[in-house]
Length: 324
Image (cartoon, rainbow, N blue to C red; front, side, top):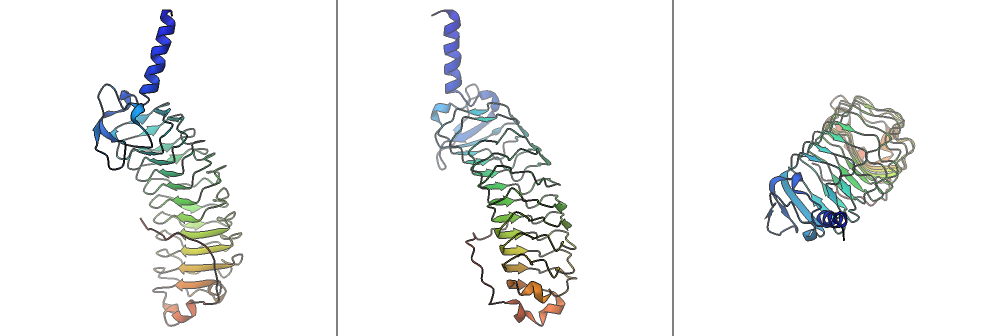
């Protein structure tokens, strides 16, 4: 064996055994099971990939995740890197992680979500909440065949791109609370064919465009409470068949359009509390809803009994909401 062959073999062994290079970390610890002892990250050796199986939690200062940061971890299912100071993740950071289904990168310093980071991975649950994300590249969430949930709460996202989540057929739940969104545009959820939960509480939303929810069919929960809504286009929900919970509370609405639910079969709960200038909903709205919560709407308080419509039937298997 000549010198060149020996060198190639040595390099190959090094890459297989130390997929998590020491240069990624600045001190800290890791866990290989949920309740296992914390192991200090060796200063010069990193984390030996031979020891990593289905679970890995890392607590270390990791400013960036470059191309190839996490590779050849074929048994890894859950990866947690919260409070690590991560400011950027580059395309190709995750390679050959076929079983990775749960990725938690919350409470870091991410500003941008790039195309090529998550595409074509088998991630089901993705936690990106409590970063400072301001921009998501147009194809960042495309081609994610098993993605069911993304949590983006408590970031600085100010605009919505209707082309996000192309070819992501399993997607069901979006958490977008506490951001800076100002508008829900037309066809905003055209790629959300199986979506059942949308949480947009505590944004700056003042406008919901015509056809905003077009493409959705049966939706469990739509939370638009604690925004700056003054009115809603009467065609906003065109194409939707059923909604279990629609929360519009804590806004500045003055009325609900008479034909807002004209395309729907039924709404189970409509929450309108804390819209202090709102007029009592029209009978054409009420007749489509099983239960209307009006709270302090003065014109409705004396007639609250009309807002429990026992004739409305709706069959949807919905998870309980967990406001956060």
